Length: 331
Length: 172
Image 1 (cartoon, chains in turn yellow, red):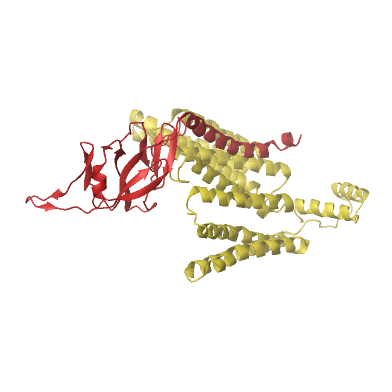
Image 2 (image 1 turned 60 degrees about the horizontal axis):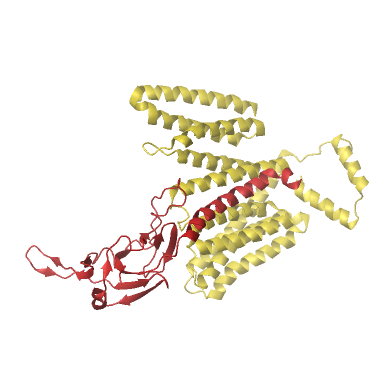
């Protein structure tokens, strides 16, 4: 089955070249929607889907192995390689891989192989930029140079995605934009990216999780299936994780976030039914269970005693588990 | 029409940008009202606490302090270098102990203008609801109100053994 984006792009090219008429397309659409003029078995067989999936996985695995090879080459011979050679091995490889990707993806038969080369470019280009900045005298662990690298990469991959509409570019646009958001906001407050100002990091994680959920929703609306699941999964995991962390723990708990959190988890569970997404249900249920344990230990352990608290936790977990199971069956 | 149709995408972009904008406003609006920190201070770069207290400020002057053993014998402490830092130019200059003891110093922590030295991000408040916690990568800042300036001190950042040791604000 041709991906929807590729199919639409092919139709646009065919229309531009005059190979297909509007009426022919409309007629084909009408016939297809009424199951007319289709072979007895129109869809790909299950074995074909599995084989294609394995082939695609091998392309990306091969791309990752190429990247590891380049990284090891640079790492092992760092002192022996000249600046030019280091740059050639990383930035040069990225440019060549990108060029090959463009070349291959222009032909539908090789589009998947082209994506593997885009994948290599996405992994090696940050390394090349890092080496370039390092030799220009910047400390690449500082957030300023990191923001610069992330901005350049995000711009390259966003423009590539808007031009070529491939999933690899969409994925790396999101990854590099996330990196840009974390490093640039950290640079603004003079804080290191991961450890410093814990509350600030938690609010940033909340924003990233919400953005991923929104992007997942946009993807599902657009009919793009490749990243919808991962965006919902990572989005809900990061969003609820950040919200739970903002609640803190005794004696530094934040009562506002502790009250908001169950509303958010229930929102995720209800949203899973509306959006038909099991990841929302799974993470919503897991976080709700964690929240029940946390609240019981924080507030009821002293008044009810530890054994009764355990009984209460157990009963509530059974209730959440049962509700989650029932919803899961309906999805 | 396109914005309305793609509202999840628009929101996914607006949310992080909104947070960045809020951070920028919360940092730079107070900064615009606060004059830049000025002044000069003395500091040392010590390694593994060697010579940590070999110089202290007493009666507004730097005084050498050697360890006295229980037997009464004076045990001279190591002598890490002393630097003089000008905040306006953000440059450090190595000075001799003889030059350093001539200077009139305020041991701080605040200078007469209200400037304070901060190591890492621990004393930086961005929003009222962010409170500072562990962050010490060795970066040294001077803080005046909400205005923060990173200092180019002679210290190896990210090296846990290398430490910045503030001595005092230079009064004249």
